[in-house]
Image (cartoon, rainbow, N blue to C red; front, side):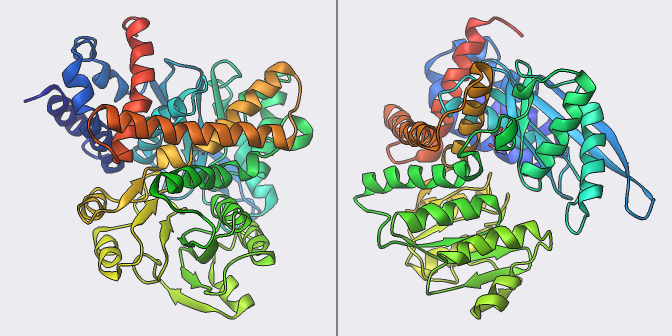
Length: 448
Ligand code: GLU
């Protein structure tokens, strides 16, 4: 057995009840075969084994009192995966599906993503199985304060800087920051990013993930001889990321025809633009988690319980919802439908391994999420820099940096794939480029 096979076998055995984590590890390690085969320093220093084991993971009780006076108990997590190139950095996901497998897969992916940004940030991820759906502001605040009562021990501007993710936006970050500051008795605003503008947030952070994903796509399109102008996009999700993607696609002259929620997808052939894009924000902040509201308001088709993949005509599919939303049957439908030949993943790991294989075999260009959605965490790192320097950049200054970072990510992963004879395989390119910087930093720092 080769080094990569050995590590995949041992990680799978050790983490047998964590399927999402195993899926992420397998995908990355498969891409790294040529790199570790050409250079035995990685095997000698057990770099792959160490990268697959979080430096630390904490799990804790989060008790809070609901509006009826009943005590609720959730489980909180923080995985501090890798600090070779900087303090741990990554979001906090608040969703009922959160468990250790999800947090570990996200923390593992984050290490590579953060490395791709070119900024000094290590990989981490946290969250809780708390469900924000239908909760009052008071309930959300009490949950966030209880969560922070434990989390504060592990974070700090030079240690670990959490931010938002699914179910955790500016409101939740505000409640967490307020309580963190009270517990530690200092204004350490580098300990959380995605903060509001009046207290150290960065301009442009809210739209960064979505806008960054479209900047990346611009560069990808350039390499394919296409433009965003005149192109039709099918998106999933309707939260902050979908909103940012739709906003920038419209700005660059493209057309968005679908968005989706857990209840089904909307098909709007006239294009989701203008006030309809703003309405997505309203839908998300209602905490109803319901996409049919859009179809009711704008009188367009709603497809209950379905996703748009292979069911609508679009040039590009951009899944922006959550992990594993494209299964093998969706991929087969996409291939059979025949219009779309490009999948730009925005959500983390939205495509199941069998579906990726099916699409690759059919000649699809696949842009992996760890590259595409890195703009969010990149602007979070810019927020940390602004906090450290005690200054604020203008929206244009942040946007120029974001654009530059996203263009560089495309160029670097494209070049990494070429260097190892896998031209056009952006998944391999992202894994290789993300790996090398972290692995070389680990080699230089000895065994830790
Ligand atoms: N949750 C986002 C991510 O997964 C943002 C993390 C951050 O800004 O630290 O990259």
